[in-house]
Length: 244
Ligand SMILES: Nc1ncnc2c1ncn2[C@@H]1O[C@H](COP(=O)(O)OP(=O)(O)OP(=O)(O)O)[C@@H](O)[C@H]1O
Ligand SMILES: [Mg+2]
Image 1 (cartoon, protein in one colour):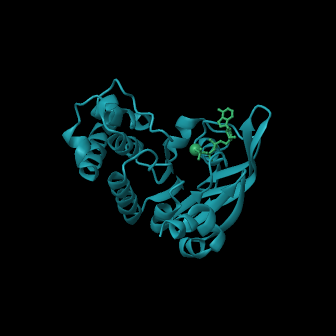
Image 2 (cartoon, rainbow, N blue to C red):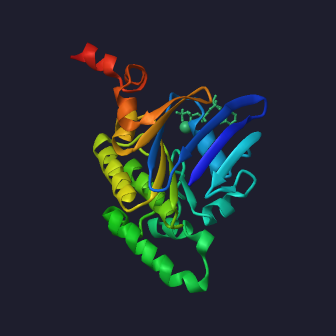
């Protein structure tokens, strides 16, 4: 469904992605793990059409999208849950969700938008409960659920998520990963960027490790979780041993 080939992107003179390639097949959940500054957000922004790559190809359903505007990419079925959530804090929960459907907004879609709103509310009961509350007054975890819900409002086939567990209380992290697993079981294709490698590999089928703008390892989630280098660098095994 998504195929990235030799992607290079950066900011001004800074080269961040240095010839990165990966793919996500239909129905798969794929985790991308890597340290701070490795280029994870840069990659997702490039896929979502927020940042133009210098070279390389991004294929969504075999169609090149690296030159397409962000809203077109949403309409083609790829939605981003951005790092840091970015909900509209002075709008209500419901208004934020409705805005997520802007790419499909039309009178004849009215019923469908109500339906998908209902689906999001059944996935996140708290959003239904708080539908009239200003998004800025939600807790961090609730805002993350809202950001996921808003992305789902565009009825994506591919959901790309940037650090959904960042700054969220441990109990809520569990809820969020449960939701990701529910979405995957419903058939949604997912590309998940996480520093919480343990949780990401638990929910994903496959994974990639990114270091300084390049993929350095790939494999099934089990292969990566069993890999001593991954364990040392991303699963904190050493820390655990010292603590014990
Ligand atoms: N808007 C920007 N302008 C200039 N440099 C940037 C910008 N955004 C990111 N960078 C730089 O690009 C590099 C990669 O950043 P990126 O945000 O992609 O990393 P990341 O893997 O998502 O890290 P984190 O885990 O901290 O979210 C970093 O060196 C960062 O400082
Ligand atoms: Mg990031």
